[in-house]
Length: 359
Image 1 (cartoon, rainbow, N blue to C red):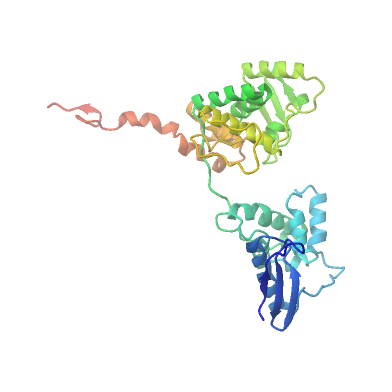
Image 2 (image 1 turned 135 degrees about the vertical axis):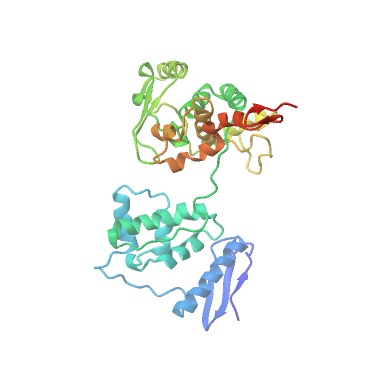
């Protein structure tokens, strides 16, 4: 009989079981999950294994000691400073597969297996980018060219805050925690990313010099931030009140409570009640400022720099926030400042080329 899913049985197993015979191969294993959709994917994976190897599980292939495997290549890459965040899942999938045998089809299969319902940009970030980086680190110039999934760059967001909304959010943040308001001020007036702001060291913050030094950023380049005098004065008071701290701010960016504080601020601005701690079954409602995230403050900084500060694309790149003009060009479309004055030259009713026409 074909492979089938047997539902969880109370008192025996909380997971779906996969049972049956496929191409003469008898199977009776746990899917390892209580979700039917995930168990179904596992069933299809078992069928593919039987079609390819004639058995399940697949026969263990002992690696050639002289050939680098994904395991050895991944270890070498991480020791060289590679980000290990997504590597454990990749190691479980590729194991000791020879690195030279991992081609485009193998990476595509890994993305579908590990993230069957993942968005293209997330698949790119969690599977394609680290796998390709590991292969290129191992093979160097001999590494083949790889294709990223369609939509891997995601949707380019251009959301920003108008001043009245930004200042209202800051006012609500001050009510919750003055240090949280100060953190948001740093994001708003310096264009730092969420993690960059949290990792600022007190030793690299010099209010008297109006500067903050970021030795490491997302694009790998260090950056010097220039502070406004009012923010520098606030930070000086903050540092005096918290001597001995290594980091400027105490928050843990990985905690859900930190993200929820921002949600409380945005909902309060819109006149909505929000629980102080997020209950498990609770979902935020749709509201006007529901789009706001910590990264929105970075977009707001760039938009304000063009709208109110007069910075062009080259100026945004010169701040060190972006490495090339293509990354900063999104704000040229949001605020085409150089073109605004041309509106005054357009024909108006009763004029031809800007000259009045006699009736």
